[in-house]
Image (cartoon, rainbow, N blue to C red; front, side, top):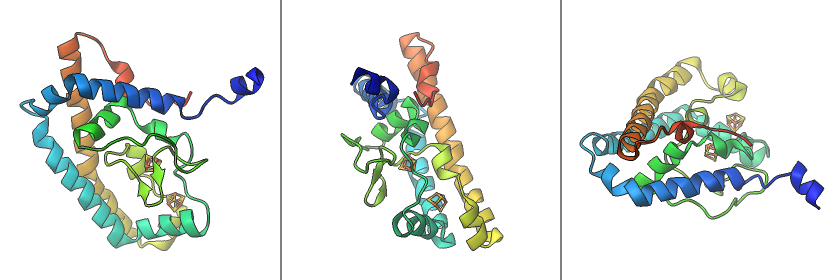
Length: 187
Ligand code: SF4
Ligand code: SF4
């Protein structure tokens, strides 16, 4: 039994640790972050940018292809482990946006954040948002794919600035160097 555990560590452990740390930071510093002179002004634009990206993807048909691939063809690329593309800062951003974390992995073998209606978090890592596979490029006209990546730019730039600001503030307030808040990691 011990041997099996060593070979197959709990695949949810790392994301659970990251979520616990993000929750702790939210409890300790969430209010300060939400009263910061710069950061809150970026939250609503970010929320709108995510909605604009979603709309562009809907119009282009990338969501439809992902749905067909995941649900009809039983493939899909929101695989187990990919939840760790979420850094602690991205998780903290979700908390600032009012997102509650799920308690457990709902779909075995899939990303911790996958549910029956897709991804359960609002702020998602760049890889999740800006990854388009061969199926997309084969089925969707190039002009549409170009438009999607152009619209996505706003969301991804805001994600970068929000994470940068959160880390800068937390480092200033705590006096710690917090590189680990920016790490992905799969172990
Ligand atoms: S990105 Fe490609 S592989 Fe992933 S779910 Fe969508 S269609 Fe499927
Ligand atoms: S989009 Fe959401 S469910 Fe899919 S891999 Fe990314 S975080 Fe996980």
